[in-house]
Length: 267
Ligand code: 8IG
Image 1 (cartoon, rainbow, N blue to C red):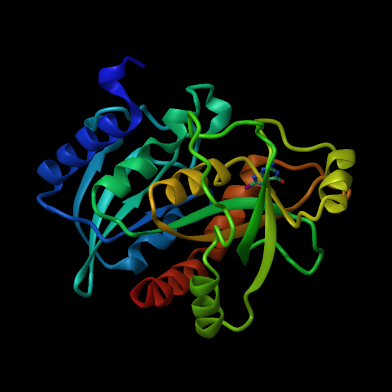
Image 2 (spheres, rainbow, N blue to C red):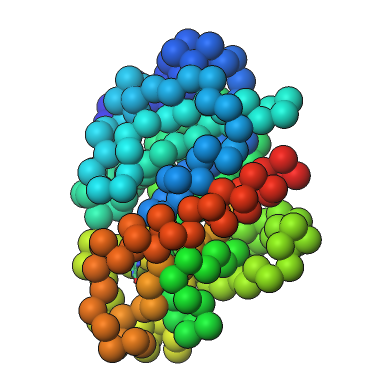
């Protein structure tokens, strides 16, 4: 990346192109839909525009089944939602800047809040596949940061306690947990899940933490919601597979749609 393409400048160009292609000058709230969350998009409101991620500078094509490379502008009440129907994962090897480019684009597009969703493994047996869990904090095991240079960003209350409290008002049955991001793309070994338990993790996945850090750097308020699609490795004795993840998402779609449909208007 040359100086002329410094991450924030590339995001600024992407945001300008987004405004041009969607006809929406400013967006208010961004959402990133992870594995299992795609069917929930219809509950958010009416799509006023849908574009391909690759129409914007700095975005590359979606790589994972169940993730579509589209961005929607959705009108919800008096606000404009910017909905990413896919994300770039760290394990794709495109670099950390590519992973967080959508987040920086959302910030430049005007979004003050971002909702990061994902599909993940759960360490508590009471979290059956299809259970949503609020992310209370994270442990980033990628060994990387999206921030370059001596910029010491505070991550206290990274996952807004204000927004979590609002979510629990909407749905008092929501649990909270610490999300642990592994680099992937392989799932964990049972021994690694033992380590996660020992270090205080409850949810395991391959996304979200780098995005949350970039969002905070950009000054956005962050809400993180995981959809537990499988028990973490070694807990059930069953092997893990991506088809199981997609199926849990399909099965949970109406509940996740209902949840987002109630939460987003109160952000
Ligand atoms: I969906 O069990 C989904 N994504 N690392 N482990 C990790 N990522 C996941 C898992 C899981 N389930």
